[in-house]
Image 1 (tube, rainbow, N blue to C red):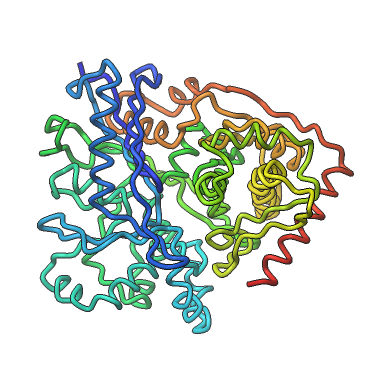
Image 2 (image 1 turned 90 degrees about the horizontal axis):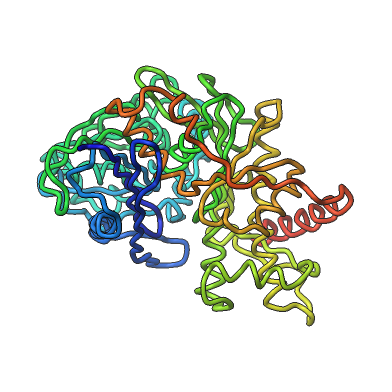
Length: 496
């Protein structure tokens, strides 16, 4: 019986396969990591063959550890790291070099050139985005400028551009499909937010040929079916696509305007549902498509901090001060405070609301008395400080408070971090029982796409709370913390 959904969450450091049953229970999960490539400082790449290999291994492993057979899969949903940019051969599927990852800052000079030409207002008005290396548009232009041979391939109709959703759908369908959804397309820097179509004027500015672009479909429909995928039968509908943060908003059942979620993954991403309204940010946030179901688009405001859980990974792998990521909580709890140490997690630049590609990480307030534990606590608090800034900017843009804030992602398991976040925001935050809400959201979209679940109400009822964190900090203590953060941010920006 076809009774389960397979969700593929293609993330920045690994690929997860998640199995969800008809009752919206998770019955299997497997994650396979893949190598990060750093050709030079500020540059980040992925090998597309590594990504596809990790996808196949994750799928194989999730069936291996669960009692589910591949023949029981009713549909596949895909969610993905969003702005990461890749090109491949339409006929063979072979990659044209490595993918340029969303974290990569190599196109900062190109963004500055476009700003000096007075183009930023146009891009912002049409796409809701800022001119920043984060987004796909300048990455594609960089690839086409650096590799002139691609232009000949384009003339032969042999080049496909995609974010990771498009690449995976192409591979899963044996190259039959070249599609994306509006949540991913809205991250490229050349999709018009109002029309949900590729914008000819912006493509012309970036000199990106339209023929390499995928077709924009909705976030929940049958795009096509699997063919020649090792470990999967042919004919499984591929029926849901959403960028990772929008999928998490969906998986958190934030279906009402004013409901928000913050995902603590590699980076930290705060999204609030703005309904059918596109809110143009005056506080350096971005407007984006949350999802499109049938003919109805739902929009969101987003604040992105590039480094969150990745700061803990750096503390583990770079500084080698802990054995595994989970160890940071106990180490941080071994001291009552940071003893004046503040950490700015600008390890790959600063995202919203500063948007400084040239910013670099910073510890402030280190003394002879500073220990590993103080540094560990400062790393966790630095993640929370960034999100405080995002919430403040978001509420100014909406001219109202966020009515509900849910949290998810790997680092949301850290109770110390969640409590400090609640303290800073002076509000209750709610952790979902399912913290893999990104993959879960993709499963929900795919299930809707084939009619396994009838409507959003079915999904709303399935959402469950794990724990609520209530603020426990005095206004005076909070003000002191924020004052130290302001000093650290000023020093960080002054050092750029």
